Length: 431
Length: 186
Image (cartoon, rainbow over all chains, first blue to last red; front, side):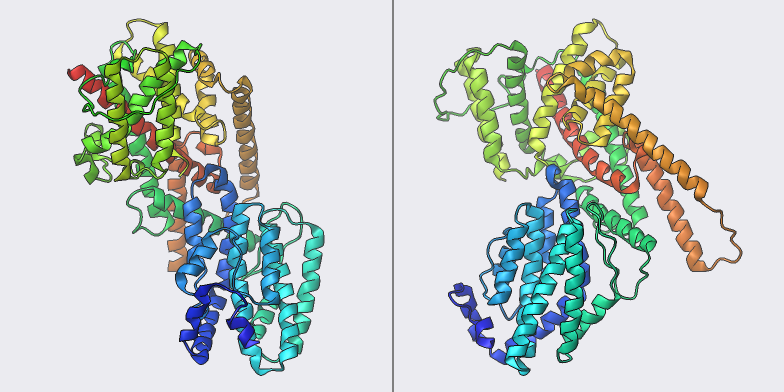
């Protein structure tokens, strides 16, 4: 049993590090970790459930895919005895890549969990997170119960793993709003079975914890679009307070995202302060828009914005770059569309170039002073740190350039500003 | 973050299109008129870049379409997408408003006024905090277009998206302003 847990057949080379620590040390470390995990477990469950929902909301938005994986890695602590940190985190973030550590039966069940939910990435992440936790748990339970009769513990482990997996699976599905009544029935069966098996077991600390937690939990009615929630131990279990709690936690999740978005909010905890900052920020952005539109109105007597000639000579240094040969493609019929592209391209390149032009702007964060000073001091530094990879930018520019080039309006002189801008924007992007 | 550069490019394209529509109409506009036109086309372009997926964008478009003068502009800017988007955005906003208003009326009618006799410090502090939060939420609702008709959770999501879009808008406008300055300077 122990051997099987520790030395997986054909597992990764990472596993070999473990042989450095003695069995006892590893056991101790694992137990300690396991205890910590138990405490965090409830919270984690909820976090994961909220993530799947939240991720659905933000998925199309793609707002926080990075944030989601970060938080998931944060919530699943690496097991010190079993794997080394980097590897574990990698596997949590890498969506449903197979779990190499073999737990025998436990491992296969984990795989089942992952494959079932692998259709949707957020669910897969949650599944992997849960599976890694669960997998490690079964290893620990393995270790702890090694004192008892080997065979009975094996059976217990299997039953328990099956029950746990099913309940959690059900929870994942419920949270992703795909629950069906039969699954909940199965859950109820498994819960009772779980209780039975737990009663039969020795008084394992962890098992008894699980049982008491199960008994004090409450599940909500099963219907396809209900969100399954469990009450925490020692908290009110009527539906109103549960709903309140769900709502409150949703709000605080979203506030956290806002904290990342609004500059200067890291120190502030508490809804009122955060709301204050958000309000100020939105107001200042709106004021900037007003001011900039006024400025543009003043600068352009005719609202023409003919930006073809905008960056003709002065803005870009002339560079000689081997530009890839661009085949002349077919006609373009819409002149209006053509007109935009060089403009867009130039402006888009200018957006990149601006980073170099305005070092004083780099200094600052926020101001509430009069609109006049805003453009000089206010800066969205996070916008300037382009999070998307430069190649996409380049590809866009190149496509636009192709279109513009085909028109034959571009003189050879003007190719240089374009190349110059593209290279400059590349440079800025890489910084 | 949702790809910021593509958002900016989309926004810029639509904005310039809108400006051309505006500019072709009248000659000799005053500075204020020009500013309004610029701002309006910027706002509508920004909202249409979201393709009606967020409430604030639908609310902006709906508000803009209320005035007849702007209808042409809205039509032009939304032309690549279907006309139905525009109609649906107006319809959705109306429906959202009605639904939320009904909920509010129901809530108020069921709410019972509690008589406060002796209030402990803790309870008092909590109620003050709650009132502050409510006040600020109301302010935020007034800032975000279409915000009065959203519940708290939705409001925060919409604010997130709105802030992102506003940032993109400010960046693009600033670059354009600088560019025109450079040109005019020479």
